[in-house]
Structure formats: C-alpha cells, structure tokens
Amino acid sequence: MRPMNTLSHHIECLLLRHDCVVVPQFGAFITMDNASARVDSEDLFFPPLRVVRFHPNVKEDDGLLVESLRVSMRQNATEAKRTVQRMVLDLRQQLLADGQVDFGSLGLFSQDEDGRVTFEPCQAGAVTPAYFGLDAFVMPRLSALQRRALDAKQKETVAADADSHITIRLNRRSLRYVAATAAAILVGLLFSSPVTERESQSQQASIVTIDTPKATTARPVVVAPVVDEVPNPGPQTSEVQPVQETDTAQPQEEGGFCIVLASDVSQKNAEAFVQRLQKKGLENVTILPGKVRRVVIDGFATESEAYNRNADIHRMGGDFAYSWVMKH
Image 1 (spheres, rainbow, N blue to C red):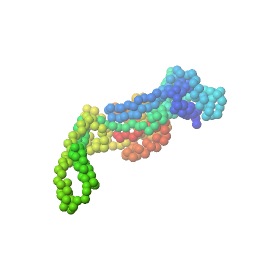
Image 2 (cartoon, one colour):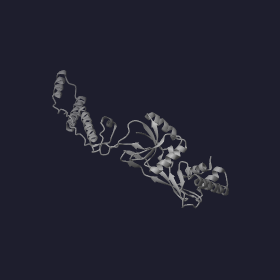
Image 3 (spheres, one colour):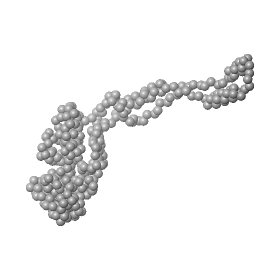
Image 4 (cartoon, helix red, strand yellow):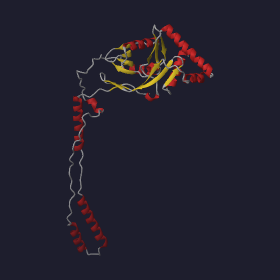
C-alpha cells in the first residue's frame, strides 16, 4: 500500500470511532453531521450525511494516528512518530509537485501558487455505520386535484363496506325478561307433581301462551369518517392520473438513465471531482446541469443496466458508496 493510501486509510478507520483526528504538523480532520435535506424543485429527499472538515491550524498531536500506526506496523512509539513525519513530508512534496493529492474517500487536497492548502471533502460524505443503507429517493407532492380524487375514492370504499354489513341490536330488558321466564318454566318442570295426560296438555298450552317481547332488529346507521385534508398516500395513488403544475414543473429529457455520484455541488467542485474520477479510469463521467448540478456516470439505455453498474461501483466504496440511479 502506498504511503499516502496508508495515511488516509488509518485516518478513515479512526474517524469511525472519533470525531477528530490530528495529523501532527499538518492539520486536523473533524467530522460533522449534516441533517437530511429536501430539494423542492426536484422532489428529492437526501439522507443525513457525516462530512469531514480539515483545519490546518490544529497541529498538536493527539496520539491517535501514532498509536494506530504503531499497532498496525508493530513499531514502538518513536518509530511510529517518524513514520508519520515521513508520510506528512511525502504529502507536502506531492502537493508541491502536482498541485493536488487524492486523499482516498476523505476528499482532495489542493495547493495554489502561494502555498495555501485547501481540502475538498468527498460529496458522498464520510463512512459511518449510523447512516448505512440510507439513499436519496424521490417523493412528489400530491396536487389539489389528486387529493380530492383520493378523498372521493376513500369515501366510496367506506360506504361500500358499510352497505355489506348488517348489525343486529337486542334490547337488554327483553333479553332479561326472556331469561327469567325460561328459568321459571324449567323450575316448574323439575319440581311439579305427576299429572294426567289431559292436565299435562293443559299445562303445556298455558305455558305456550305466555306473551314475551320480541327481539328487535335494526339496520345500523353508518356515518362516513371525516378524512384528513392531506391523506396518507397508499397503493391507490397508482390509479390517480398525475397532474403537472406549470409553475413548478422542470423540463426533463426523455429516456436514458444515469448514476448520480454527487449532487448540489458548485461548478468548480464538480469539475475537480470529474477530473479525479477520470484519473481513476472511470468512463462516461460528466456534469449534469440543471437547478441542481450533479456529477453522473451517463450512457445507460435501460434502468436495469444502470442498477447493475451501480451495484458494481458500490463495491468499490469510497466516492461510490452513496451513488444512486436517476432517469433523465
């Protein structure tokens, strides 16, 4: 592993457990959590990110990097400090010679003619287990016409369910009266003395003529529930024809898919990101203009091709850990 890659790799691993890692006599890498965001113009939701900032004025050794190298290379503390010094010297020499240094998945170092060093963090953010599996997704807003159509559909469903059920209600007083009468008849049968056939028929006739209130039945009165102003969109949204609002619609190119590597970046950062990816041998990397400027891998005719390629580059990690597929 090259010395520069070794240095960035140790810093990446340390940032998984620490919020700040100092490179002695060079600067400090500090992580910050950015909240999730929504791009209203494209109805895009972006998950939270853990970004890395570089502070060149913080140079006092905190011991984390030296200890990591000491354990990894099986050196003592003095040898590990010398190893860090050599890596920092190589980094400064490469900046002086090339003007910029690719620092792994953390970002890109650049140095101008006056010797000022700047750091551009990776647009995908720093790797952190807290945000694994989160990706950007599209959720368009429901128009007023779509909301009215959903309300009408739900009301029709509730009314149809109400008509298909019949509720039987029994009067409690009638039930108690019937139960008491049945109990009295049972006691009379158990404890009565033997009677002749004629008397038995007379008793049976008298028993049958007892007038009892009849149970009443009633159909339910169903009141349709009040539906909220904005219903929760469910599977029924597929039956509603989408309505395009002319004041917020954004013209898009029909057909074709691409893989988004970075979104909402400045033109300068996008150009530097494209150059860095092209140096790595990645093809079809371009800048997609629009209200939200993106760096993409373009040229996929079908969605399946784009998803297959996206799965391949996800395994590469680094700049490609948070890429996603978008239709033109």
